[in-house]
Amino acid sequence: MTKSTDLLPADLLPEGLEDRLPASAARITAAMRACLDVLDGNGYDRVRPPVLEFERSLSSRMQGAGGVNTQRMFRFVDPASLRTLALRSDITPQIGRIAATSMKDAPRPLRLAYCGDTVLIKASQLDPARERLQLGGELIGADTAAAASEIVCVAIEALKAAGLTGISVDFTLPDLVDTLTAQDPSMEPDTIEAIRRELDTKDAGGLKDVGGEAYLPLLYAAGPFADALAKLRELDAGGALATRLDGLEAIAARIGALPDGDGPDTGVRITLDPAERYGFEYQSWFGFTLYAAGIRGAAGRGGTYQIGGSEEAATGFTLYVDRLAEVSNVPSLPRWTIYITADHDPKMVAVARQQGHRIIGQLVDGEDPAQFGCTHIMRGADVTKL
Image (tube, rainbow, N blue to C red):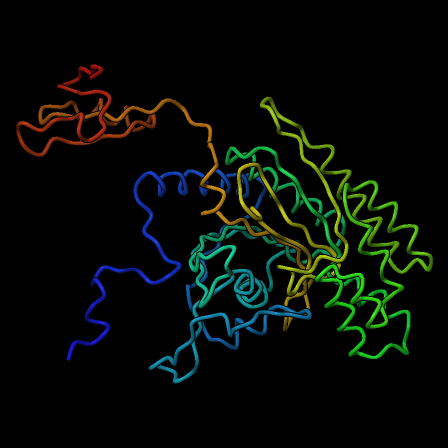
């Protein structure tokens, strides 16, 4: 009897995973390098945590209502320690672990950058990819509007360096409901959770039904930043949000001061959706989502949070490199692909490499340089165009 698994091709990839062929891999690499160069130029030192570690460590490093859900991760028992390991779905908790352990004595604020693969057990219908290249930066040890402003601006600079245009930033206040409901000690936890749920779905009728009529104005305090902020200030009669709203205004002012550059569509649009919580499982008072022209869905997200265990404040961002690489256009110098014959001049090859050109060496007689995509050929010390 033939097993069903015998009918599957041996080279079939699992759902949500794909090979990146040369053209796609080159775009991803170029975008990754451009973004990492921006982080390095702003003082963010790159670290490389392992692709898997103990499940408990990953689940305990991010505080907040949602935290890190290890149920979304591939997990298995480590034969050496007999403890449960997890394949990371988010690198940010690992950065928190590094900051709280190996780099706990490093001067603060601590600026760290990272880039690596993450994997999910199951992706969403809107974004079926189960493997992603995650890149980002974390500013640890500061919980101020200045720190949040720096993170947002570095993220925008990274997107621009990757050649993206039409960039917009959508601000949110992830702990908004908690902050407002704290003003009413008589409110039951079940009611608070119901209010969160109805705000998430933007359901005005449902919000009334669960006793959250007072929160209806939050559904309409969204849109262009200046207008939405003014509406929020009107709603905040008790001043519970004053510090947060002042912080948002300071961050927006810093973004508005960024140079637009020379190309078209390089300005940044700012919006505010104060009740948005999707994608902000562990962020605290501030969160933001990045969008860019040509990208379906978000180009990245970020915000403020606390590192579990050390209780240290941090602010960071994540960019989805695979996604943004599809439309990125990294500026580059003219680059030749030079086919070098067996009698090439090694000194000339070294010069060509220093200038950023690509070298392909002859292996056998009769090769056709054009089939390798070569633009030039080097015989001895002479370079000629094909």
